[in-house]
Image (cartoon, rainbow, N blue to C red; front, side):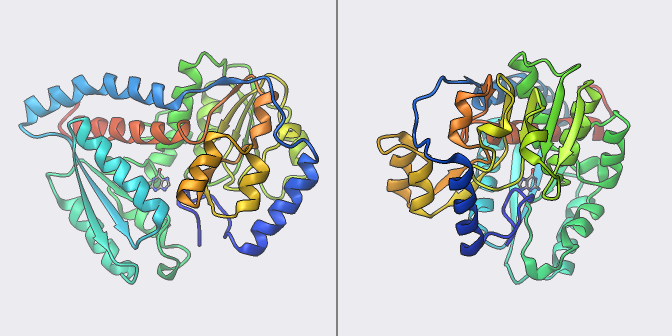
Length: 346
Ligand code: GUN
């Protein structure tokens, strides 16, 4: 199964065990050392700031149109991570004064059934934005996501995944741009991380994060390298980055040897880890993260190893880093779509 962030290889016990062995080999005996702390790139604070900035536009649109901006979210199946993400999106939209409704389809739904829901939302004058939560069930087929994203009307495509919106992004004239990468740009800029003239390295080449991330950094005048599973000397290449974005969906994969001292590191990973040995290796006994694991029996772990805090100049935490920004940018895109559909000026 693909992870909910859509940029992950299938996770199996075998691959988790292999990761653990590789992790142990790379990290060695440095268990739970006390480290100099990197500055925290506080995604929650920046997301709250963006939500406050969006509020007047929501109010003005609602007053003018006689209804709030409206988002249709489609969730197929019961992927636990997607359930959490979608309920966060619904809750945040409601708090921001938007209307968001959820269309659920069972995991057994066919692609045609899903496409019919999208077509209905496309035709609905009352909906300004449409989001189909990724990943879709594997049974829908390898190209299901592409086929769905291709059908969503570009002016309602608040994910920025439609080829028209991707093309606009390539030409640096995007209006609806993928939420996670655009949120990361907001995080870096508002945390005063210099992008122009920097070396930026993106690990991961997904359509949802890696590729749009690379383009956004490039448009802000960074020199960008995109790494992936077949990049030779990955750690060495990553360590050239003044900015390092980790979006590979492999828990704690990015160890200190991947990081240039003082670099700004953004962790996009959100893998649910249930394996006790992995958690014990990563987090010290009395830590908050261990406490969460003891309470829930699972823990969301980023792509960046905790020891990176001792090398990086700035680091986004998991949770509380990129996640809240993705939602804030979704709200922003929905308001933008509503305003543009209503004929322009906010
Ligand atoms: N799954 C994980 N992140 C996203 C996202 O930004 N949009 C959609 N549609 N699905 C996702």
